[in-house]
Amino acid sequence: MAVRIRLRRIGKNPKGKPHFRVTAFDEHKGRDSRAIEELGYYKPATGEAVLKKEKICAWVKNGAQLSETVKNLLKKNK
Image 1 (cartoon, one colour):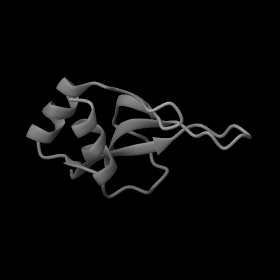
Image 2 (cartoon, rainbow, N blue to C red; image 1 turned 30 degrees about the vertical axis):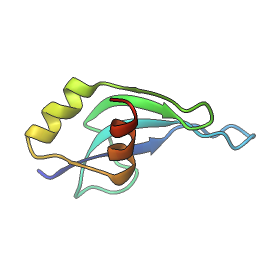
Image 3 (cartoon, rainbow, N blue to C red; image 1 turned 180 degrees about the vertical axis):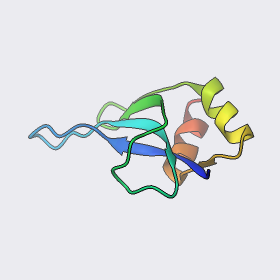
């Protein structure tokens, strides 16, 4: 199973201020498929990001690939 760690949009308020969850997905499933595991969240309006770095590292060691945005979030939150 190919796993990809990427963002999933969850905020749909009328002001257009989205927020996202960092999640692990099966790469072969569709865009709106069920996530395997929740690994944190990101609020771009405030710049707040809470990531479970230990779990993300464990997924990467098992072969998961990070999206570009998640890579950048990890670099900023070291």
